[in-house]
Image (tube, rainbow, N blue to C red; front, top):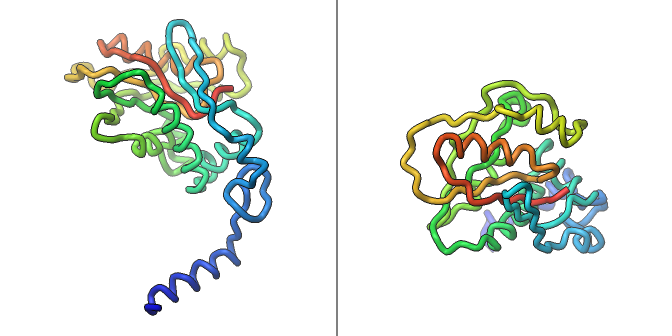
Length: 213
């Protein structure tokens, strides 16, 4: 066995001792997802129509899904990132279009990006791109909004009203745009993102998310 292979093997064993793998769902030592939690993280397409916006999601926002998302979004755990990406890819595969199209990640506030050290949804969306699927980043916040987690559906809609703007007003886009987000709850964020893009002359064909709450 080559020396560098031996070193890699020893490093993995040493890393496992220092940072043992735990299940993202229940924190048991072992796999990224134990058998019990994996059974609760199975993908089954969910279609929601919020107004006239069609949203495809891979699975419900269960306790296991929530823990995975927190590990990825707030703690930056790469293996949890991959689980969210897998869910987004599942939703993406069920879009009913044979044409080239564009993915627009729903933007985060700059304060959240600074806190996390990255633009979470934008970074994950990059992993969804292919020859026929490209990413754009036209949206941005132009005012502060409150944290959405404790707001009612009506309050979320009012909180986000007019919050997004388009960076470039004239952009030669002929392809359809699909919005990308981690989880859809009331749909207020996706509707505001579509409003801003539509007002600037772009066509939003729908949205994909990993989870549906």
